[in-house]
Length: 381
Ligand code: GDD
Ligand code: MN
Image (cartoon, rainbow, N blue to C red; front, side, top):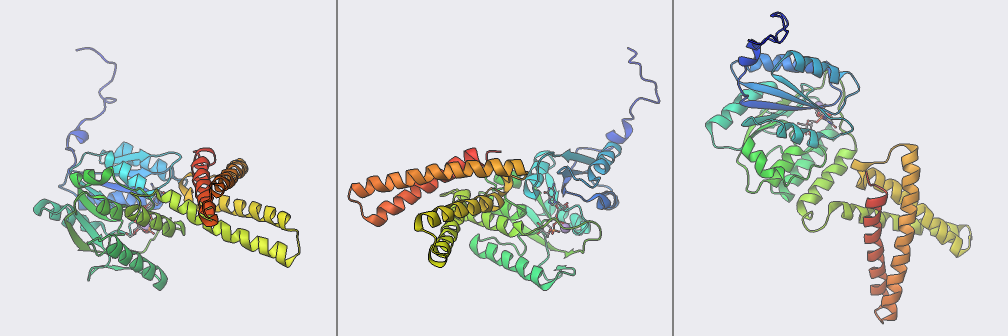
């Protein structure tokens, strides 16, 4: 035998690896700044899942609180733990999707890292998939024995209203389509994966609505626990991202959602413009042309920041340098948009189209130009 220069004590032990068969169950856990919860979660999973072939896949977006080194050492010492480290990325849905794509286990669970989801439900979830022909098992807060521990009335109402909207608008037959805790068959995920919207937090809803034919759902009640360590990453953008998801799933096949958002922001810009114009010209007697010019600058600037925060949230410009260059390119794009707007309107008007049809056509051409050009030059990341 060839000597490869490794002494017995240095040779990697294969015993622990051999005892782990390919996993039946893969638990995908999106993670962002959860350092104090990670070891405890793995401990609970090990205790619960003895006798099963399982793995856990943590998908971390380059946490800043030490989670990444905790995960690295967990994955190096425990063959059941895998660590997918994403750099320069953020997003709960995309983290979950990439975690699922990284495994070939026939059953995949999705669960938060912060111990708010009741891990004991994993066992009845596997049994439901094994013993019935259902596609997905959902941990529900809204079944009779389920619940939410210590939520204030506002958050509870918002969550319940969002649930109702999904049920009515998207015909989802689940009591808790917003749940971040579920288990599904690999094939069920494969059916949806190419049609996912990948927007925001609501990955289960996205999967359910993207399925080519309705998935068979089983639900298991659980009580959503209070967070002990760390804090929620849910912010006001979640509501906006939810609206984007709803739009994408309803009118999205016909019109790109981003364009609708861009137009909505543009509509608000027109209102801002008129307010400034009225204030300067009517209120302060500034000559009309100067007032119009200032109003246009104010509206463009406001639109730039609104689009940056909302329409292009995922490609947001952040540093002062990015913002200044972005703003200048947006001014340039919109100025050309205004020229094409007026040009088209003038041509149509000269061809004897009515004043309002000429005007609206000009606005539409200008808006499409602004949208297309700013997505190339301003938010190109
Ligand atoms: N990789 C990654 N990237 N993980 C993230 C990100 C991100 O940008 N944002 C949040 N996470 C991780 C958190 O670390 C946590 O493990 C999990 O996603 C959920 O985030 P929380 O901030 O704790 O959300 P929540 O508790 O307010 O809401 C959760 O539970 C609800 C009920 O099940 C979410 O799962 C909701 O989608 C769900 O409706
Ligand atoms: Mn949480």
